[in-house]
Length: 397
Image 1 (cartoon, rainbow, N blue to C red):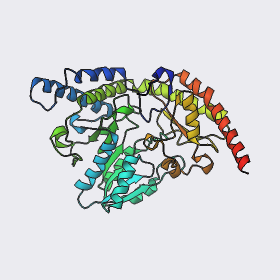
Image 2 (image 1 turned 90 degrees about the vertical axis):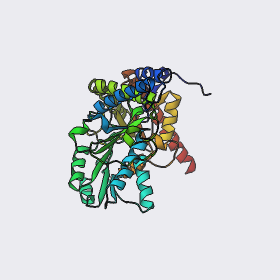
Image 3 (image 1 turned 180 degrees about the horizontal axis):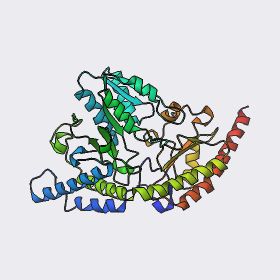
Image 4 (image 1 turned 135 degrees about the vertical axis):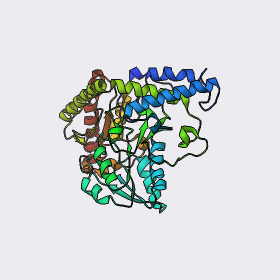
């Protein structure tokens, strides 16, 4: 078994990939692996106890995203399942409509499904481009909307750049065309204030492990009155909208993490934004020709993506890893792939910087000391790699 390094030994800045579970969420989960193990669907008292815990968690998650009714929360295995459910359901329930509008910078859980549906001849896909700051082309979006649009699926915030889309406005425009609107809110929940009831959003995906909850649990918000075709058939759990015995411990942990996130959001994210800004400012100052990727204003408070010229992000990350600094080159779902980021390609990042983009994503667990450590190590790492790159070019010349 691989020896685990203590979290305290690391500077962990890969929170868009996953967050460290909050100890309070873990403690809340443990009783439901022990004495409270019963099936929430069982009619005896032990089952009722588990069912009560699920109801409390549903209320806590509902409060985090500003849903009007707890029944609008459907527990799933996470963001990918929620995204798939929303998209496939819209095609099944929107009779006479077979077009989906999304963006070129969505998470693979959306883009891969859309490509599959397109290749199978089940849907026509409109992929809306973004500009060099990651902002959606609103004219192209408006032109794509039609009476054939079944669903618009647009992320609330991008996982690689942190750029936030104007989903409230996009949802309103979708409704004018008679289409449903879904948002992948996985990166936004717990990092910016969400109030789905105050918007025209019909469906939204959330994942617990992005907000200090456990992995393998998430939810799909489905506005009251929106028809939903289940992805998983079988029992009548989740009001017959998602079959399968409820993962009570994970649901309880999700609920506690959501409640903590809701209560701590304003103060925690304000502090996190200051840490992000300092890392960004000092890196851009100290590393020649480094550039910021994304929109400086409309973005998550915890995310910064900086590209370095003429070197590979994988080499940077390897050397940071040796210094016990965890960061990322983009989506965790594509880790280990040499393929260039589809997000950066869509943003037309200059070729000189395209393979050298590193994402630093913070959480409420980070400190000034973490930023100090990165600023101590990162400029030296980039400088050494650039010298090595020049040396290798000289050898080949």
